[in-house]
Length: 341
Ligand SMILES: [Zn+2]
Ligand SMILES: [Zn+2]
Image 1 (tube, rainbow, N blue to C red):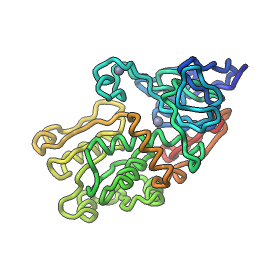
Image 2 (image 1 turned 90 degrees about the horizontal axis):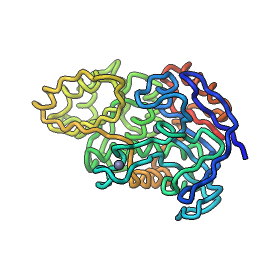
Image 3 (image 1 turned 90 degrees about the vertical axis):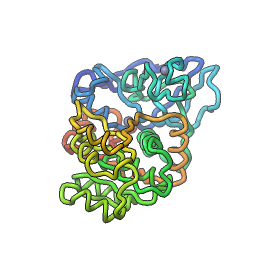
C-alpha cells in the first residue's frame, strides 16, 4: 500500500510523493498521522541554515496520530489509541544514557531532523516513543506537547521554581510555553520579554502576567517593578539573541541560575568575566526526557497550559510548501503552524 509523504528535497523546495506505507517492526507502533507541527528547527532547515539537518529530509518531529497497527512485541498501547510522539532515538549505552540523561545521548538522533520524520499519512516508530493523548486535547494541540516538554525540562534545570520570581527572555513558542510551565509549576511571578508586541499580546492572552517590550522599556526598571529590589530568582534565555544573554550577565541579581534554551546560530560574544565575578550558574537545556513528556501531557490535559492561542494557521500536509511560504511571509511573527493529515 502507498501513502503520501512530503520531503524537503533542497532548501525552500518540497516534493509530495507516493511512497510505500511502512510496516511496523516487532518493537514498533504504526500510527495514522493526524497533525504535525512546524518547529523553529524545521524553518532553519527550510532556509538551508540548520547546522545539523541536511536535505533531502522528511521533517516532522511534533506529531500526533492514532495507532493503527502494533508490532508483535510492542507493549502498553492499543489500536485506536490517540497518541503523541517523543521523537528521540538514543544509543542506550553511552555515559549520558546510562545516567538517565539520554536527551543528550552521544549518538542522539532526532526523528524528523536526523532520521525520517512524520510528514506523511502513516508513521512507524518504537512503541515506547508514543504517549497517550488525553481526550481533552485535539490532535493539533497534541503536536504542542513536544515544545511544551522542552519548556518543562528547561524550567527544572534551575531547580524547584515554587515561590520564585522568573524572567523569560523571548516570547516565541518555546519562551511562551516555558513561562506558562513555570507558572503551572508554582512560580510566584513570571515576566516575559520580547521586542514584538504581537508576541507579547499573545503571551498575555495565554495568561502570562508580565509581558514587557524591551525595545521600549528598560529591563532593569521593569524587573524592579515586577519583582521588587531583589529582581528575578532565575532567568531563562529563549531569544537566541547573544546581546540579550550578554545584557542579562550584567544586570541580573548576582548568584542566580541562567538557563540557555535558545539555539544560537553562531558564536555568541558574551562577557564571561561577569559570569565569574557575579557567580552566575550558566546552564544549558536540550529537549526533554520521559518524565517531562508525562508532565507536559498532565498539565495540558488538565487545562493548565493554553495551547490554542499559539496556533497561527493550519495547512493540509499536501500544502507544506504553502505553509512554509506563509511562515516566510510572516517574517518571524507566525507562532505555531500545523500541517493536518
Ligand atoms: Zn520542535
Ligand atoms: Zn546514548
